[in-house]
Length: 122
Length: 216
Length: 296
Image (cartoon, rainbow over all chains, first blue to last red; front, side, top):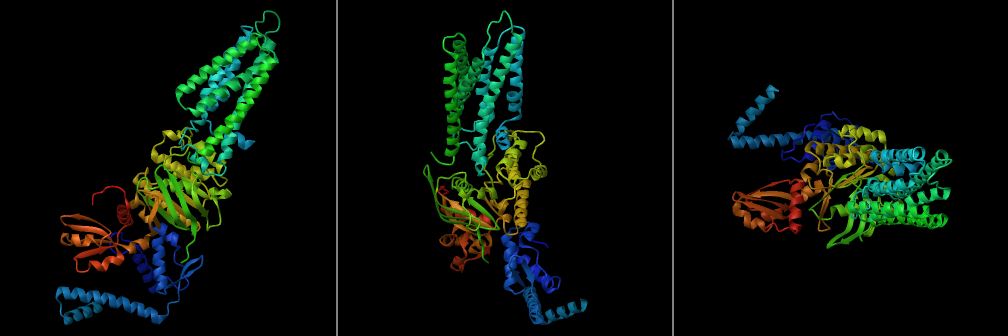
């Protein structure tokens, strides 16, 4: 896990983001336990409360559940919600692309062509 | 008992242990041995002086100004519930060590005179009560000196207490040796004085430790 | 999330020589590292001395370990590891004697672990140096070695970072994190510090003490939401100055800490907003409460 100290994005959000990615990508499967809060804090050289906040955010999103005294385990990701999560990320990325296109002065058509061209590439 | 001895020894540096527990007793006995064999007499007056000075001077070495005002030196002891007990054990064992050493040194010294100065031409032949007197003299006077030094931790107080104690010790010994006062009476007086001072020494030291938990 | 307290104090009061420590309520969260921050003379050492049983003359109730234990019980000190601001050993002791006294004082002291830690922290043990011959950094390391060689549940460290070099400060942070990890929520650390920036990545909860009073406290992540770092143009400085918690001006603009819930009062100004660091927050809180004449 890579953390950027001065990126402007709070550390806890960076942790939550990477855990979220791992869960959505299926790297962390249903029932898997996340690394212990204090263990992760030790490994990442950050405070306990920061990792805790990241995990609490994931819990609020319904991705993980806290088990008393055992840590956090990954929930069953229902496919509908999973898709929704993925879609939200696509939307976010596209919104960012549209913003950049506006700054660059691209027309809607140019933007769509770029998208199509990129789709072919990947 | 084992923990009490450990409590005592833990405050002593290696140097203190070597000098006070090994070198000094051996040296004194050697001097005494030579005095008995060569000069056919006892070196008691000389080592009364030496012992009192050594005991007074070494106390600072042993407890390292532990009773200085506003000292943080015993803070580590205070972080444990056992700290006070260890401190007390050390103070008591220090007194026990002193008494045992003095009695043994004076006793062996007496044996030397008995064995090696038998017969004619003996200048001074101490009896058993005199031996006890020597031990008690050194014990009580060194305690008085230590008492003073623990309250005023200046070098000059230390030196003064050592010298004055030593001189007073020799004078009292000579008074006894000269037969001016009955030895038995002096033994009794010094015994009571020594016992009282022992209790007082431990009590006041512990009061100071206790006081360090509170503002005065 | 329910958080228990490793130390809880009510109506703590201690007066001496024109100084008064007065803490109506103190709760140190269990399972975390808590920093005690404050100016010199704010009462940090006094507070730590009260909690560790080095001073007993104070008013108020202190309980330990989920409120179950009292200091007078005797067992509490066995479970607490304390290091002082300067050496609290007899100056003529060497490391061997320190181990010996530790063994006498605490039944949970492990001599082999102590020796391993001395080796790990490269404390010059083999030279048989006296405590008074050690550098300040090594004195601190030796104190840390004695507490880490014990099975404790709470470390109370008075200015552990101050005498240490940058490398060792980093190591200290690692040590604290490892201690917390091994406890898995059952171990806590409470330390005072002037080196907030160095200790920031190991601080979970912060308590800021000024003139013997707690002026701010909270989990660091919460404090970082409560306060914001605001930067703006010099033209807005005067207006912003009325709203900002603290502010410093230069000819290029201003920078200051603002309470998050006051941010909307700054609308219309050309400002940028960032999350402040703990040391920025602490300095701001301390500035507001200090008796120092800083000349704002």
